[in-house]
Image (cartoon, rainbow, N blue to C red; front, side, top):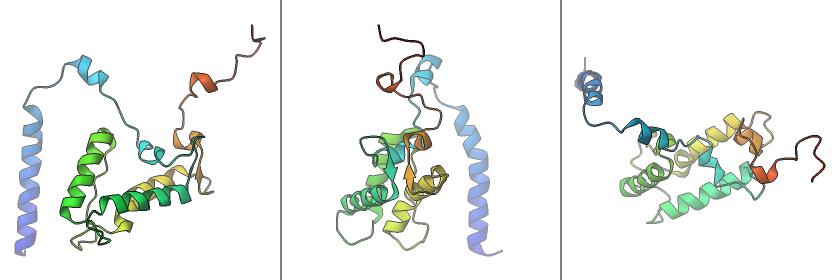
Length: 161
């Protein structure tokens, strides 16, 4: 076995032992606090690209992703370096917590280009766009979500009085 493989296997073995042990320690929140924590569905990552009717188009998402990438690329070199990635990941964690999707340099280039930056939202869009029309309706984006009370139709048999 090569040295890199031995190191990787050692790290995996240590993590396999350490993570369960570390998970047992420390104070846990009382159940009342745990229940009060807000869960963030994965679709929230796409909500910010929705129009006033709650519809997200692929074009709007791509435009939003380009704007987000440009904002994150503070040195304007077309590639997110380690400090820029760290800033984006910290922001994502603060906003999305349970569904935060960290940026990872999957191409091992030392920085994250736009396609890596956009990979997770694009994949999520494709998963929700079941009919492949390039648009996510509120029903596709949030299946099973009840409309807000202001948008619900009156009950049948109601005469409005």
